[in-house]
Length: 141
Image (cartoon, rainbow, N blue to C red; front, top):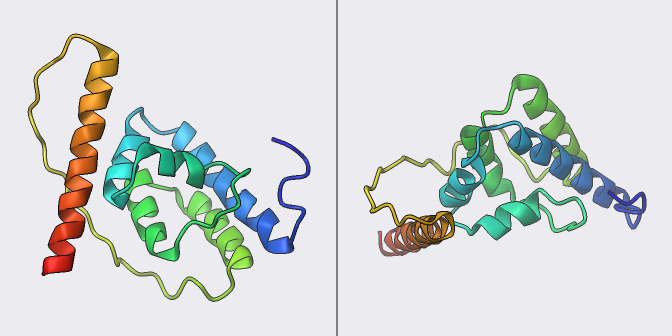
């Protein structure tokens, strides 16, 4: 990581700090956690890459924090460090603990395509489709 990341404003340094914490958490979780997080957030895997990259100083939306904690199973120390940095970066943005976004897991059986790349593409298509359906259902209901 470059030393000059986050030197623009004090908040930038804290944004980078909580992104580093999240990246370390995800690096220590089982493979597939990033995909699960993307699905739970209704986003692509590239979004998860952006929210864990301290070079991208775009903040993580407050509404995603509870989902991140739920899917990534942060320890109390990790959660505390993340919330401290998030609070410094975005004072007052996080209210009392909330469970705004809840998710559930639905298992789908798909054919084995015999190629890892094709299997990942199929999984991502399903995740994207499920996220679109969820957004549609929320807007209608």
